[in-house]
Image 1 (tube, rainbow, N blue to C red):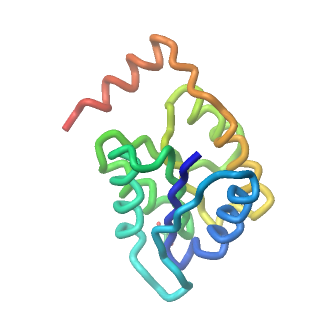
Image 2 (image 1 turned 45 degrees about the horizontal axis):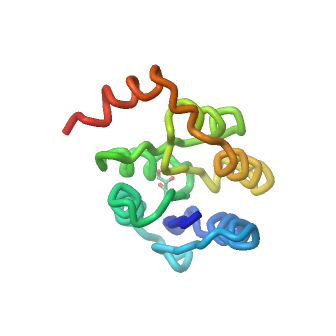
Image 3 (image 1 turned 90 degrees about the vertical axis):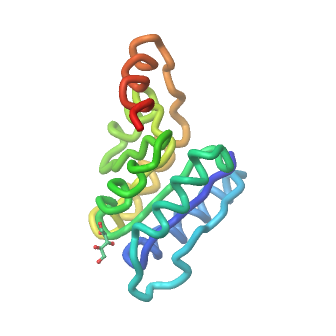
Length: 145
Ligand code: RB5
């Protein structure tokens, strides 16, 4: 898959680990910044990643800040983005199977590296079920401008 990553300073280290992991698995990875751990504003990266996923330039996006909260709030302002803040593998799988999440948000300060890798793998490997009830439910909010 063609994946775009973004983080602020609080998610930079975890982003390096997760991006390398996906590259090793054969995915194409782009980093929209931040490129260091100097304090920066999470929303600027969230919006770049969210807009590029919404436009179809990437298959999926992954956003990491200290908690994942700011990233998910900002990304979900962009129509067509369904950003899921996941703290365990179950929500990661469900966010794909039922919600067709196209952006995964994680918190470097809240989620250990081993768990974050397991969440990432679960999220990458789970297909959207796309049955009529899920399509209808997503349609109820995806069209509101
Ligand atoms: C930065 O200190 C922190 O607020 C940010 O990384 C994120 O957790 C915001 O939601």
